[in-house]
Every structure is written in C-alpha cells, then in structure tokens.
Picture: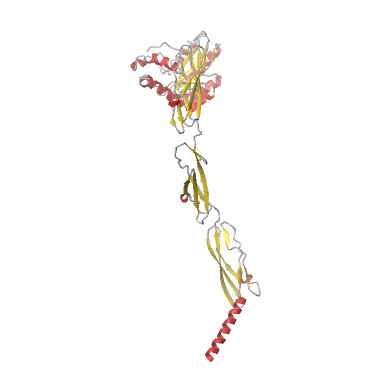
Length: 458
C-alpha cells in the first residue's frame, strides 16, 4: 500500500514537472525552411514560450551556404530560469532552375529527301551543375528529335528539333575561266567548261543545258546560257558573254607601256614607289602573288600572268603542263586580288626557241589555243636587256630603252622586277623622265591596247 502511494506521488511530481516544462519550454518559429539557391538567407527566428519572448536569450549557430544545395541544421541554445534548452531546426537550400539546352545547327533542320539526319550537336548548361551535356538523352518521334536532361535536383528541360525532309537549295553552277571572254574576229571559240554541284544530288554537271551560239566571224557580243535543275526542281542559271572584236592595229600611237616580268619581289615595292611618284601606270606579268601584287592592283596597275614555275622543261613539254601552270598562277592571283587576269606573257616570249628542246611546234599550238580560251598574249618591241648582259648596268639599261622608243609605234618595254634587278630600278626614273620630256605618254596594258607579238619560231 505504501509502495503504491509512493508511485502515485512520483507520478504526480513527474506529470507536474512535464506540465511546467511544456508551459515554460520555448517554441521556435523560422520564416525560411526552404531557400532558393543563391538567395540571401534571412532566417528571422522567433523564440517564445507561454509567458514571454525568449529570442534575445538564445544563442543561434548556423552554417547555411546558399550557394550549395543541401540540408543544413541551425542550432539554438535557450536559457530560461534554471533551464538550458537545446533545439535544432532543419532548413534546405534547393535548386528550382531548369538547365538550358542549346541546339547547334538549324531548327528546323532541312534534310535531303530520302536522306538521313546527321546530328548537328547540342549543349546543356545548368546553373548549378554547369556542363551536363553528357546527361542529355535524345528521342526521335516521327520527324522530331526531343532532347531532355535533368540536373542533380531533378529539374528537367525538354527541347524539340524539327526535321524537314525537303530540298530547297538550288545547285551551284560555276564556269571555268571568266564570265566574259574577248576573242578576235575569225578566231575559234572553245568552251572552257563548267561544273554543277548540288547539295543533295552531288555532281550533276552532266545535266547542264547550254543554249546560245557564237559567230566568231561577226563582231558583237554573244551570250551562252547555262541552266541546270536538281531532282527537286531547284534551278540554277548563269551566262557567259563572248565578245568578238577586230584586232587593234599594232603600231602608230607612240605610247609607252612599261612591263615588268618575273616578279613580285622586294624590288617591286621600289618600282611602285617610283611609278606612284611619277604618276604613271604600268603592267606586271607575275610568277607569284603577294602584298606587292595587291598593292600594284589597288594602285591601278595591270596584273598579267606569266608563269607559276617558269620552268621551261615543264611548261613547254606539252599543252596540258602549260595550262596547268597557267591556271595555278591565275588561281593564286585571284586569291590575292579577286580577279582572274586574261592578259598573259609566255616565258621567253612567243618567239622563244628553247621550247624546241621539249616539244615540236608547241608554241604554234599554244599561241592559237590561249586566244581560243579568251586570253590575250603580249610580247615586246623594246628590250631593256636587264635579264641579259646588262643586268647590272643601269646606264646600258637606260639607253637600251630610250634608243628604241618611237612615236611611230606602240612601245611595249620589257623589264624585270624580280630579285637581282636593282639596276633596272635605278634606271627607271630616268627612263620615265626621258619619255615625259620627249612627248611620250605612259599607260598600263588593257584589252584595248594594240597587241605586240613576235613571230613564232616553233
């Protein structure tokens, strides 16, 4: 009986203590239980019990990093009367921002009919996980490709690329050579050729339709029309103009045409300085193309073609070698100045005999064939001999030129601006001043310049 009474009293004491503790025990209120990644953390914690605000009596410890996703514990120690109470609160930094998927290439993407789509690429960047491209999954449904990715917080992004199986691109139709060819009356027109490439059908050169006629026995301008269509009906067209004119008489205008072979070199810059100072134009038959070629062209001088290799044994071995060499220097000049020159000079001139060592009658064929292909070739009738015995003698170079000038002819002067011809540079200003003082004018060669040509010896 006494034992039961003791237990009852003990139960009453414990219950009373718990009741008092619950009345006095603090409640904790926090306004931020979930914090968005990167936001400022302002917990604004309030602590109170039934009788009073205990916030000022609390010691709060927290290490919440809002730049890092995770669960954090805030510890509160509250002193009240003879109690020392410890509480903890859990808050969570969360990431709600979806990743960004960027599709490379086109959207919608056009694919050739009956073709296969080739993935153009994509990237996935998340604000927290950074580059998660390797987590992207792709799903093809009908003519759409869906790209989906989830970041480490489960935020998902889905984007769509539409695939259209259609060909809306016309073929690329290009002409060999130039779109304007000038021929002399009575010469022969030879089609330089063309090429047609389609994005879906590939090489369709054999589908090109050519219309138009050229009568080289009648002066005028003739149009050759080129047309091609791909299997989807996309059409490309272009035109080549063939100009037939009468050959200009070679003699009688008294103009001096200064021409420089085998350059450019550093000496070309010195030549250009003199020409600029004297305010005259000249012609450069080049074996290379560089900044000096570009400068000469931009300053109004004529750029002609000479040779890519200047190797007689190669270029005069056969006509294929010659035109391969000519096309190479033509392409190189085009890369620098943006045009394909049509004025040329044969290495050694059209009258050279060195070509006999490599192919019989090669010059007879080439002199006719270059004209048929739309080129105009020039020789010379005044030789400075600066590539011969007078290469280092500026005085002799001067007299070689001025003693052979005439007001009764078209004066095409052969000089050189390649390496080793400093004597030519030293003589140039005096040659120009002689011409000016004696009533000559200076011009650069054009398509209208009277043609000076040698007799062919092979």
